[in-house]
Amino acid sequence: MSTPYESAREQYAALGVDTEAAIATLASTPVSLHCWQGDDVGGFETAGSKLDGGIQATGNYPGKARSIDELRSDLDKALSLIPGNHRLNLHALYADLSGGCVERDAYTIAQFQSWVDWCKARGLGMDFNPSYFSHPLASDGLTLSHPDKTIRQFWIEHGIACRRIGEEIARQLGSPVVTNFWIPDGSKDLPFDRKSPRERLAASLDEIFAAPVDRALNLDAVESKLFGIGSESYVVGSHEFYLAYAVKNQLLYCLDAGHFHPTENLSDKISSVLQFVPRLLLHVSRGVRWDSDHVVLMDDQTRAIMEELVRGGFLARTHIGLDFFDASINRIAAWVIGTRSTIKCLLAALLEPAAQLRSAEQDDDFTTRLALMEEAKTLPLGAVWQEYCRRQNTPADASWIAEVKAYESNVLAKRG
Image 1 (cartoon, rainbow, N blue to C red):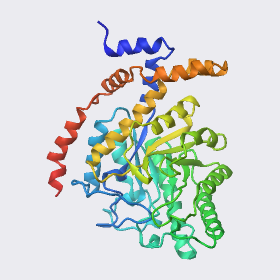
Image 2 (image 1 turned 120 degrees about the vertical axis):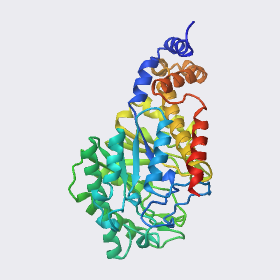
Image 3 (image 1 turned 45 degrees about the horizontal axis):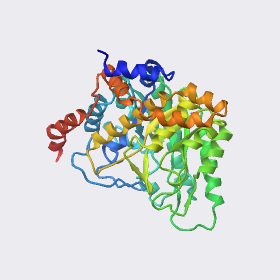
Image 4 (image 1 turned 90 degrees about the horizontal axis):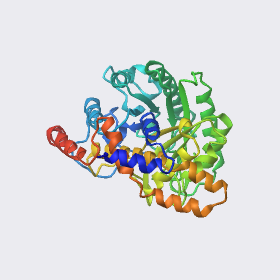
């Protein structure tokens, strides 16, 4: 008697799909897990730090990580329940300051060495982000576009420092680091002068990216946003600004699934952007009515993103990261749900009958194209997913929930 996977493999093969090839590609495609889901974007620079810069984590579920050790323990638990070999995405405000307080403009690899060692011990790659929020010099919502040159220079130096840190992380781990730049700069109400802040931002970025680093090790990315809390009327780093800047300077462009108008399809932007920039960074998230960064689901939007990456042959030029933070549910479960959902969407895309769909489209046989797209929706994806999880020694079904609940009782509940 054949196993469910063997039966599924035969069904896919009848449509020209090689499930073994799909599993191999999935296993070699890492997702960058964002550290900030584990503590509601708090970081460890100061106790009880206050979020600003248009960022808000809602909810007060018990058990939030209060230290670097607790956050790493929670990440270990989440990673044990997620199939595949992935990466850590770290924000600069998670610096290890056990050796003494250091300001952000003076950060070096020393404040992140313990994170590098932690990743190396687990065979993880790492990505990095300057933190242009939750800081006294960002309290008015302006950083790299600030009219005060002293404040602007502080943030320029922070960006330069972070690129050098990214370069050294990559050197030690033997894997390129994406260092992603997002700033909260904008205006709550209608500005009169939209030009000057953008001129200052462009000049600040020019100074940051002029600092010499090995661009094969540190991959610079810039990230736009439609609006934020406190920047509802005007965002300096808009989509048009950063896309033009990325094309001009051949940087990575970051597409965040929550940073566009709800009626826009992020998946439709991928093939356009990759005509003109070398690589793409994705922040997979789920906006609900606004950029609310809900936990990623296996929904139509996420599936469409992954389908576009596979259909266009863009996986090798794309870095997939997560960016959500939900404090209303178990934070470890949020990591697991969001990452597993992202991986499932990618698997579904890898299992499309691509050759037949492409052939039908080239032959103007749109009837067959539409019919095949619909038939593919009921193919036994679940059996292939279970086989992939089995080979990765992670739970293939909902049994992971019991592990998270046990960890909550044994570890999280004792945090008070």
